[in-house]
Image 1 (tube, rainbow, N blue to C red):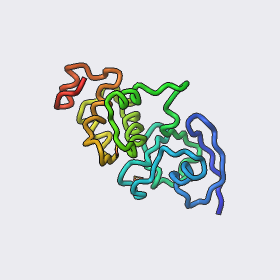
Image 2: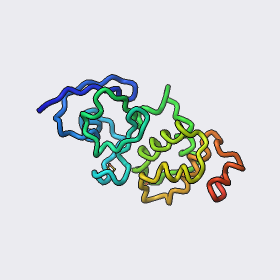
Image 3: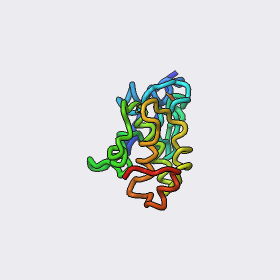
Length: 168
Ligand code: FES
Ligand code: FES
């Protein structure tokens, strides 16, 4: 059975028809061409399919698309404004925080959510916030550094909150 679905995706109103059993990740990637959310595990474990729904992270591989009806969704594609990366994205670049980059969209969205509610997180808070996003390449330290140092949020005393020296 088909269902009509409407939501705001990256500040754009979307209306489409979907099958009731379709998951959000499929709709985003296959019907709307939004490719930053990726399918890593397809069972809610790896975080590569992370998107923001009303500013909160959800794993789009285990969310039915109908649950997005009337909601506001943000993917990595929606973070840039006027062609400018967010300070968080710039910080990831500056810290060489990714290798293959498969995990990057999900990690950046998880960090975006964290910094919205807590602009100066501790190292432990950063680690907790990205704990559901698996990265097989980096060992996580450059990711934590990028989040900790966005906008120089962590000055030298703040860096100590990471529990180790942060590259400058
Ligand atoms: S693909 Fe959704 S959590 Fe892994
Ligand atoms: S950079 Fe390769 S999985 Fe994170």
